[in-house]
View 1 (tube, rainbow, N blue to C red):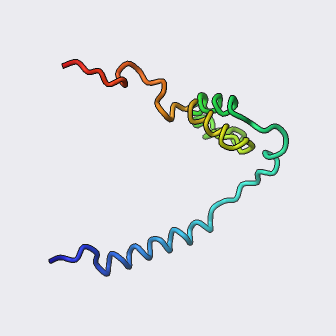
View 2 (cartoon, rainbow, N blue to C red):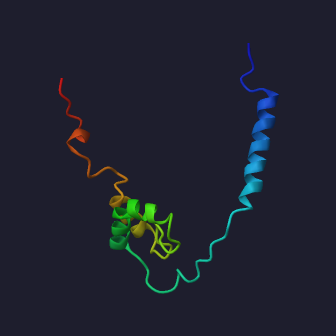
Length: 103
């Protein structure tokens, strides 16, 4: 009977996890104090940000002042609006998504 997990595989996995943990300390910390003062975004802003997320994603490449997700949000309602706006649940699927197929 063959061994499913070899010693070399375990050592490689341990070294890989250790390298990932070590490299996570090199991540850049973003200063968000300026973002957390002022207006708090709720459900409707989350919905809007979800709708324009593809455009924001492209514009983020060239501009530093554009973000896909607002850091100053009210939590679950903003996230729910963002999810609906981005089509995360597929609620706005086309006629092909309903399951009717031609034979």
